[in-house]
Amino acid sequence: MSGIYPVGLIGYFALMLLVGFWAARRVSSEADFLVAGRGIGLLVMIGTVCGTFWGAGIFIAGPGFAYGMGYGLLLSIVGSLTSVVLLSFFVAGRLRRFKGITIPDLMADRFYSGAMRILTALVVAEVGIVLLAVEIYGGALLLSSIFGWSNFTSLLVISVVYVLYTVFGGMLAVAVTDLIQSLIMLAGTIVVIPFVLRATGGLSAMHATLAHISPTHLDPLAGGFITPSLIVSWVIVFGIGNLTPSLLTRFFAAKNERTAIRSAAIGAAVGWLFMYVAIFLGVAAKALFPNLPKADLAFPTLITGVLPPVVGVLVLSAGMAALMSTADSVLFTVASALSHDIYAAFIRRTASDRARLTAARVATLLVGMLALVLASTVVDVVYWLQMFSSALAASAFAPVLLAGLLWRRATREGAIAAMIGGSVGAIVWQALGVPVQAIHPVYAGITVSLILLVVVSLLTPPPPEKVLAKYFAPAGKPASTPVAAD
Image (cartoon, rainbow, N blue to C red; front, side):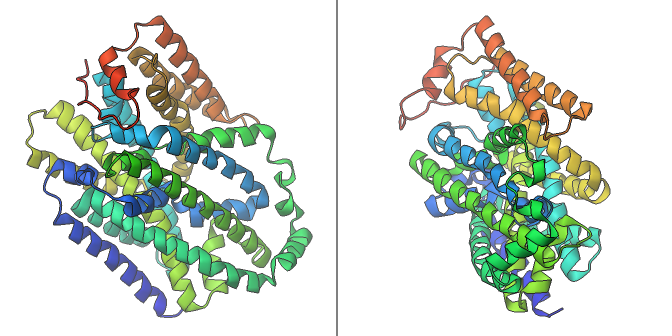
């Protein structure tokens, strides 16, 4: 292996740490740490939205699934386009209008309930820690494949870097590193395509090879595996399941409402386009290396088997950037929920601002360590949990959030019932073991969630007007301070 790979990787990691140390000098309060003083401009916002929108899925899971499934995976992207529309037109601006700091802050305020703060914080933690473990596991797989390191060594190297710059610099470090990482991803995706096409002999030759070794890779329905039911479930899971707390938290830090809306439209759309490249790379890997022992090796094998070292180190950095840009955002969001919404809101309400800042940094460190342990010890369970947590986000969290922002009649009782019922529905259906291409667990979860949300809300007293006036005020009207939860 060329010596440029370790040199390039060290340079990339060093740059991320330098950004963290630079941002640390600008953090002196909890608000600085959690929302960067609400001063992030358009360019950095676009970078952090784009970087958070796609993680290890861009260069690990995406090519891996395409390696096994083929072009049929393109149908899954329709759901992500749905999330771009929701973010741009209905969600981002309303989030920035809110003057709180975290997603549990928002849910507690909109549904005037301290119970919603705890419930949301717990959902954020469950979904986030599992996703975080999967992200760093994907990065460890990449490093292990290229450098021959053990799985734990690779996990440890990744964890030390992204945890350190997040602990030091908070949201500002996360946002700036996300911008840098998004630019690296963009450069890597542009550079890799010509080399892969040359290796396959061009698109026509690649398709001819696939028609011989695996015709289902050219079948839009993957040989019958992709059913209409699965397509609809993808629209739901990726359409509203992409509205994760780690992505939505970005908009609290935007400079203003206009910046939040524009960054949502541009950043999510660019992130959405990256998936096309990921699927192409997976299909190309199938044509070039049809007998890989694991589908997740598709991207690392392309780097070492097709690209010259100078290009390979750039694409390696792009792969690391894809996963770390999401990992730092998820880490930050989970730590914020634990420190701000559980510690400061319930355990130590009289904590000083300095104590809250310390708690946020300690929580960041502890969550990073927990994700490292989870990713290194229970890999198979982690992947099962990732599927469940995606269904959980789409079934329990996102419907309640959207209802809170778009439906005046949604009540706290309806929200609590929907979040609990949607979670139980997804868990029970997953446990029944019905094949996802037949009926995905998200169907059960979201059906229960929506029924409970609507029925219970209509049977309980409407929300107070002082709450509704803030969330349904005309665009651009300043929001009042958060309403105290009962």
